[in-house]
Length: 359
Image 1 (cartoon, rainbow, N blue to C red):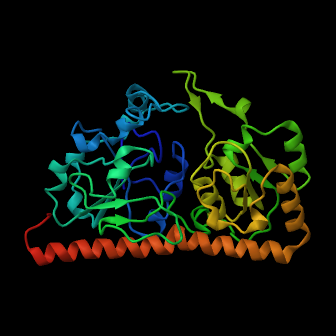
Image 2 (cartoon, one colour; image 1 turned 180 degrees about the horizontal axis):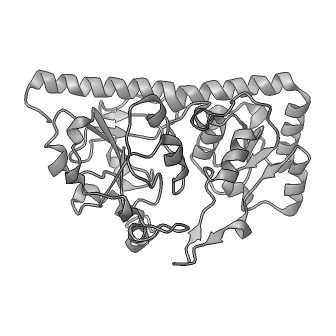
Image 3 (cartoon, rainbow, N blue to C red; image 1 turned 45 degrees about the vertical axis):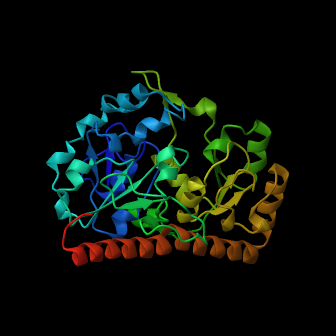
């Protein structure tokens, strides 16, 4: 797996870092960490290349107007909250022997076509991390230059079949127990308390916080809890892989989201993989298939009522938990694993049949 040195997400370390330590270095999300527990996988950071196919990251500004290019480029020299930049770990893509890998997965296309074509036996796949970016939509029609497989991030349990180069593979490629496995913890330990989604926590009131506390300890990082980097003044987000958050996530009984902006649901998937029972309002939720009506409260009062019911009815709670975990293992791990292996094998078979290398 590989990312560019201007990428503000995922891991920030050397290729020799152990999976658990690598996970702890993430700049934001836990990402496809199961690649490192179920496959022989290494992680590389490469210098951002000027080739057109390696400029997907710029779409976050033009046309999306998220942050200007300079905001992302600053990560090369300084990562907020840390004493180093990503250039400390980055090497040129040309320095790595990609032929020693069966499969290379990059985020926003990190390796240019002039390099990938030198390695015809290696299969190159990629995410477009921001699903609103034009390159995400166009990748369903054809892969970016020099790439073979597009990883769509879809977590739809019943996806439509599409082009042969498209694999419905989630950004949070995870299974239930993956975090406990990495940290050497007991996945089936007794649980208590609530982990509040980041976006919900920023909008919650003091009354809501107190109302949740009757069900046990509550982990909720609000706006006033944000840190500011002393070097460049940028906000340092609270990551779920930081020690206090990781402990809360792997020990909490519930994960809740009832407010905040619409999301795809990666935070929820991470929480279910960590063993929580997830409750989320159906508005603005991209992963509703994880829920029955019992775990999809419409508002905060309904959320309290749902938790109360689960607390008083262990059988019902366990039944809902089993459904969510089965769904997580299906869409987060088993189905995408099989689909990716089929796609890689199919691509290699075509190369063998053609006898002419990468097409």
